Length: 146
Image 1 (cartoon, rainbow, N blue to C red):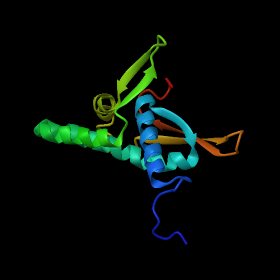
Image 2 (cartoon, rainbow, N blue to C red):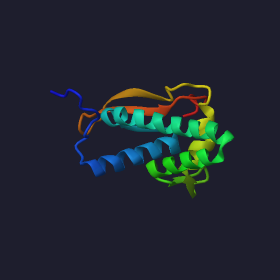
Image 3 (cartoon, one colour):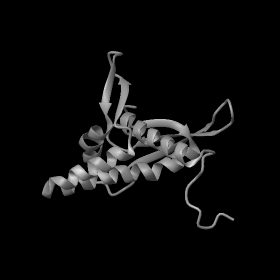
Image 4 (cartoon, rainbow, N blue to C red):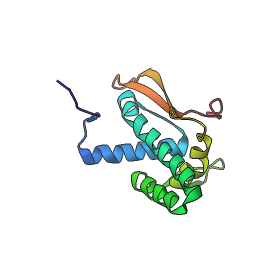
């Protein structure tokens, strides 16, 4: 029986599982939309929402005490991969500071929203191994642009 057992193992040991979630959260913040298996998306969703809440609290508490915002940024940097290399519109590779993007773009967008920052849409089965696939995306103003 699975009473009082929290979380999914995802067929990985704890170090691999932490690294996987760290990479998935970083990609979600960087691209604002990722396609993954349904089990990974269900595991990722609460962790991603907690990161956005951490950034929101860091911004609001940082207005009265700047040290609190620094503390929140350091906590976020510990739980994310700090830099992600992405391709821009011109096709060139650019380094993106994910923590900066979280605090300057994503968290201010959700300041008026109390939770529910992500949406999971089921896609069906993957052809190769019949795994249930899902899209995990940030809810917001740019829903039609992706």
